[in-house]
Length: 264
Ligand SMILES: O=P(O)(O)OC[C@@H](O)[C@@H](O)c1c[nH]c2ccccc12
Image (cartoon, rainbow, N blue to C red; front, side, top):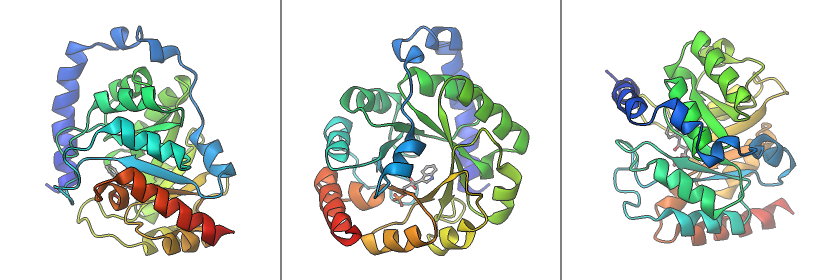
């Protein structure tokens, strides 16, 4: 079993328990359930930089990233210094996050929030909405075409946007559908953790124009962004580069300052 399959197997157990504790009918009563979502794809289309800054404490590839990080201060800095959106890891077992982080982020900023998790069940989409998310992630490597269709239709019904994550041409060709808003190319192979920005560059041309293109993972300098922009990317999902430092908000601010200088 590779790491992705292991995460998905654990996730099924976790979701089954969670569903019993807080059924969908209860989620639907929470105040954010009726909230009108903010569009990340629109923000990315109009933003000159298009950075989706991520909050995560650890990951399977970086177990000691920033174990004690607190969400509020960091997401506020991400907003203040010009992020187009924020990604919050809600997986506890492998990333040290939780739904609590997502709700705290919701209370702290107005930016669109991506619930970053391994969606394998419709329940998690209701949960994302109830906790104040604007966007869900669907990972093509984990889901078949039918599931992607079912999940993205539900997301749309709830007013959420969908970021589809692909890692190769086959996943892309099998998973595109009209309900998807953004296509993210993950530069990190979730099966081996290897990072290669060429993954984005090579897949860019195959992504139809109507989808906003997002390059995910392994981006550590502004030069990479300028290059990826040339390949047609409008969104850049960056986590570790900021979270690995003692003050992720300050590192993000410095990164944005540099990027704005180069973009002029
Ligand atoms: O920390 P990085 O290398 O900047 O990567 C951020 C983000 O792309 C990464 O966390 C990610 C991309 N797809 C995922 C799916 C699940 C969990 C995490 C991820």
